[in-house]
Image 1 (tube, rainbow over the protein chains, first blue to last red):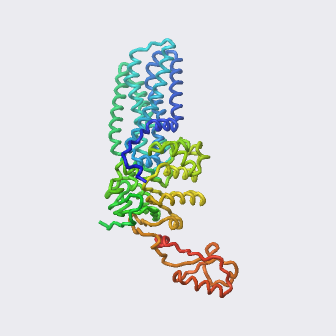
Image 2: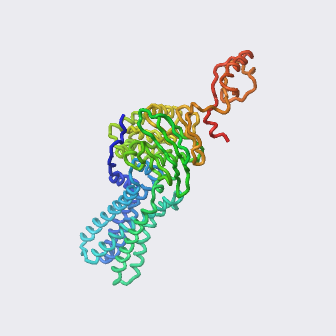
Image 3: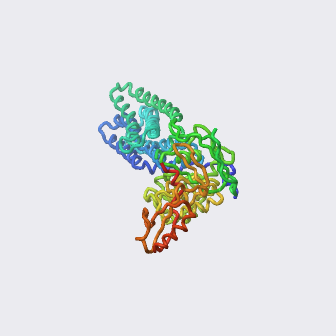
Length: 238
Length: 295
């Protein structure tokens, strides 16, 4: 019998199935992220000063829930690593970096679901209730909400993956996975607190500056993580 | 450079698995040191060693999962890093490696997709491993033994030249373990199978060669049939006359006697017959592989 692998074979993309499995693994976080962000939009629209409240708070709070909703990418990576699934993929010839990037793409996709649903439903409700779509709101959403959403979600995932891969395995809320949501929501909360404290005139500069600065930090972390995540980090500790 | 151990003559499988001066480990600490061997003959090569000897690390390095610090693994002279070489081997980890969130059939389809198997192959292995009733069950709902069967089904999706099986029958009941061993034995007729186990009797039953690891070094690579136990022990099971037996240790239903060699068995039986002992069965109790673990 001829050897099966005698000719060069192109490995299929695992992205679609990874995305589906990531959504299943993080479904509770995803539901919480989507539902709470929508509830928040409705609550803001029912306040006495809905236009100003919505325009100043809604853009700042979406990243918080979007990073929470995107935990599926991290959960999937950590589960697959501890159960030896990643080892099998590597034995088939899948590059470890591909597995890492796929997990981060799941994070980006899941945070996009929360971001997209919050923006679509929140803004539709905002406009439907007779509020104007101001340039200030547009700028906040484009300059802060969108970059901060992806930056905080990726920050939580990257830190959680590296941390779990470098440390002794442990479970529960003190595990890297247990603490990762806190890492994700901490930066948006910090910006929220600072934005409340600063002068209204500086609001846009502070939020957008924080968002873009944090995004740059996450990009640097991503580049550095490719050095930290060598092949043995993908192996099950068991 | 240590002398490479070479075993067997090339068989119907053209594969030659070679390890040259292999050192590997984790976080900069070597677990395997200077491992060199060459395997040419299709057969089952049992990898034995105490816990922490480096068996799993050896399998991971042979499978190209773990990068060696030094040395190389090749199949037919081609590096394990090449995709065409990876496509010639199957690796079964000591942990199940089954993806959560999927049903059994979906997990097999996922692995089938990665290794180029089709739906027909998935259906075939569901029948082969008798896991058809589990096909709609989620992997997370399975018992340890059921998970192991599904994990093993994966290695039968496509045929390969080389199989690296790390404790394939751990967690299985004796009946299923026996069935799995039969499947692997059949496959080993024209394939190279490296098989790790802590069960020395299983190792002796299915293995043709033994590779013994200790503290990360290859301490023995021999044909099992050429190994003889340090002590020759037979077990005697009797029908009647137990009270007349010479003093001995009892192990299960067997009374154990240490003899100079197989040629002394006839004399022992004659002596027992003279004492009115009716013998039901005589069994060789010693396993030469046990000597590998003797302190």
